[in-house]
Image (cartoon, rainbow over the protein chains, first blue to last red):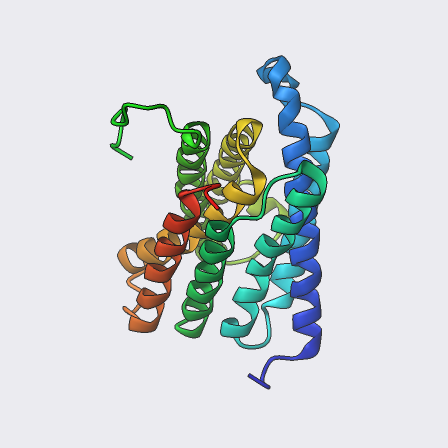
Length: 116
Length: 131
């Protein structure tokens, strides 16, 4: 565990936060599709895609050094942030299934990283 | 995926089921994209911008990412973000399985346990908004 440099963790953590905002912008942009498919070319979606690309830069730099069993679940922390933003910005409910499912996913990702 | 029209009463979770199906396809395309990127990266002997821009595998991988993003957006149009977004973790499952098949990566039991847990987690999540 202590083979993972703090700089890698910070980079991956940053990437996960940026990516979670990318998802928020995608959701906001997706709402515009109600007026027809070609409304897919809108600023929010462009911002969402840009944030996703930016987050992958952080991930690529972050996972160059250190243990994947630590870093992969930190990538997936983006799902946790997204759960919080979904409630804040879109009034989506916290449910037991969401928490339980997400917990299992993080555990699974930990094992995938451990085995990599 | 073959649970078409079984319930007698319309469930409230029905629209999100369509969304989960779309994100499911999105993860398959995303995994295929990663495999193409890996194939392309393996082909690059002298990495450079021109070599990357003219590599069909890399271009194919990027295009698949594009299509998978469109599917994700279509899913988000009607579905909950907090429910659909973590389903993307299924990408880990497909990439692991495809890597075994295509690149003959060694079968790692710990990794297999991990992908099994992810699948169960997505299943629980897919049950949806029930408290």
